[in-house]
Length: 278
Image 1 (cartoon, rainbow, N blue to C red):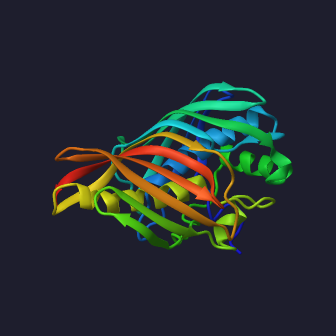
Image 2: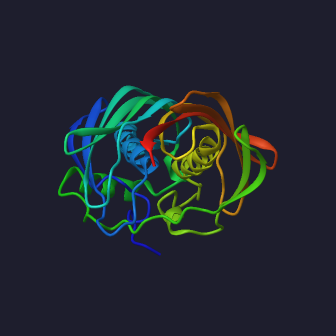
């Protein structure tokens, strides 16, 4: 099992803080990784906001991902680069935190989060408060050693139904055990919403290649109205569905949803755009 904070933690150091209001931080993407997805960049921004909220709550409560009005994917972050992170807290109460944030590489924006909402739950259900306090002190001080993250193996997707250019359905099998559960979370393992979104994007890009003109290189540009309705647990099979809503020569708008045992656990919309000729 990896050391604490090495399997799915994406803030190495908090460089500036206005308690309960704003924070700046950094994460060094290890050079040896094969890649670092936009969903993990969004996870890094969300984790910075989570640290601010937990500190404000005296490490008695912590937020969990629930709603995101909009994520704008503006560029790529590559292994070996430094992510500069920022969050602005709109409100932070014992019930919920509302925030926005951004990530930049060498001053260039790569991602923005707008109006994200995280309900605050009892921290002791997920992790040891004393350990989180110690981690916070380290992050606000010298920071954690960089390059501990060894990457995440994306769960396989198995396509179960296809209407070419219109709809795709697939099954994602959540592993019963994985290193990232050690960070997410030690006392209550939960499949990260960012990894679910990454799988939804993979499926949406696959569908968009059928809907858009051929020989185009595609990328996600925007994810909106994301609602996480329930936790996804180790070992569960998740049904994924994405459908095309509108298409132009250069972009496709799609909806997506996830279900577990017939119950809807996540929904949202996204835009896939063309980078130009492949």
